[in-house]
Amino acid sequence: MRLGVLDIGSNTVHLLVADAHPGGRPLATTSEKTTLRLMRFVEDDGSISPVGVAAIVEATARARETAEREGVSELLATATSAVREATNGPEVIARIEQALGQPLQVLGGSEEARFTFLAVRRWFGWSAGQILLFDIGGGSLEIAGGSEELPHVAESVPLGAGRMTVTFLPGDPPGDVSVDRLRAHAARVLGDVAGRFGSLPSPDHVVGSSKTIRSLARLAGYRRPGWSGIDRWVLPHAALGAWIPVLARIPAKARQELPGITPERTFQITAGAVVLHEAMAALGVDELEISPWALREGVLLRYIEDMGW
Image (cartoon, rainbow, N blue to C red; front, side, top):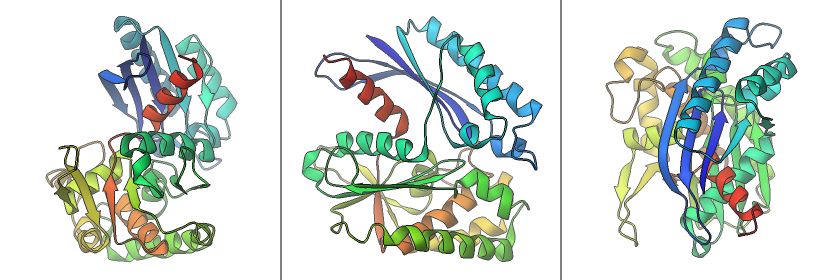
């Protein structure tokens, strides 16, 4: 069966097409995304502007056409923080569903964390033991931890890289003063969250799973050979911290020349680095490993299981 997962997020509209069969790993055939950076279109009253809504609808319609062209038999369409938190969310959802020709599943923050944790658990396997997960989107940061297929603790906080860029780092380059303001804000928010993870055993693996974190690992991390022959990127806390002043002092155009920083991430990579650095500090993490699987793969895996194959 050919399945599609459409993730309408705060930064991109991303379609993943994969072939799935009983007992096998989903095999991706197509990945297509449109960069939106929706936080630019959030008005003072919390609504998404007409220009932003039009951009979402256009990207959604294009993704639907791709899915049809690829022969997708079932399209799993989800939306995350930017849409669910917009004051005109019901209107935006109705426009998206019209473009899709089907219902849209709007995920809550804890649902995002659980789907992503499922994907990471499957990627690392049961032998990975206790996992602590960080995932930074455009609108929110998800943290989850546990030793089972679903996390024992899952938190979502409004510290997404796009949201924090618009709120705290609007300048280009943002400079040290703005970065320090963001650092203090993130530390305050994460101080409350960290205590709720204190009851969990120490993690056997700390994992980062978002595109922002993958980009930062390629900038500040290193490759560690994996037992299965697949190299895994590792991001040390200290190395990440050393790069933050550099990112804060150079303009966005120059950042995309750095290793791992793609054009669609260059504007919000500094905020992502600050938030991740503070999250790792709050939970006492020295380094984390990178998972190539995240929310979209988690949605896909859960659907396959629910099919009862």
